[in-house]
Image (cartoon, rainbow, N blue to C red; front, side, top):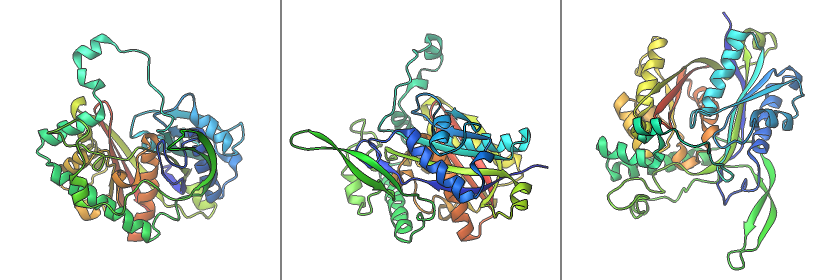
Length: 386
């Protein structure tokens, strides 16, 4: 039986949307760097890569094809971009694995990117029947996070405490150098606006670290932040994911081919599941996707050694963790998107690569990546660490 394994991983640092190092860099350029380095790290000939499958939410056109060419892959390497909102990067890896296991491909890149700086609009209009049947399908995700907090009794204090812990864990991991082996250095040009004259200029910068986190965060500081949707609501700039730009890529290969080449994979892709939920509480999608994934593989929550559940908002990831009974000590151990940042289409690929590297450090076997998905869904992926 064929199996897909992950033989390499590379990502950019995450830069603040609008104000950070990638505020003048196109998403295809960002992703091109990640793909180029992931392929270099794998040791495979770029000409052997059959396809590039990229997750991206804010894309215009086929960013996978463009980024693959920018990465130095030949014109014979194809490319496809998919959008399943915040799970796009993980879904891209699942699609790449399927391409290998079921369609006979040998080497495929699974990746994800988003530039929230340059995020475009969806457009295309709205169907009135859908609006009548499911009006919450168009609800901004920040409002669904407030609904989850109120509906399931997740206090502002509980969310802020969790957000502080995310910042603390990320700062500790950053100080310990736990991200250095995954982040590549990218030279680019950043737009700078003079605060007084408003004049714009371009300066040369190097993005070689995550720049969104706030290691000096305190609980008192979080408590002072006003809810975005006004008094009585819950979501603030401190307990929601950071808007950011970045790209990540992994190289997948058929297991026996990797063995023949003497490669040592990070781990194997084992499975993927999605599930739907009410659009107005889209953040709890993992509560439905994770049990479906585990059931298909004969596993329970206690069988999973390490979890990465995207921190879109503190309310939804807290509810999902607590409802599923996940041990906090195994959950987002190096912080999550509240601290690190969340380029929508990139995060799933980042979480998959990171959990495999952290899983290897900890001697983990089974690890799960999951996230909520705009419109009322959840996605979850199972990996085995080598």
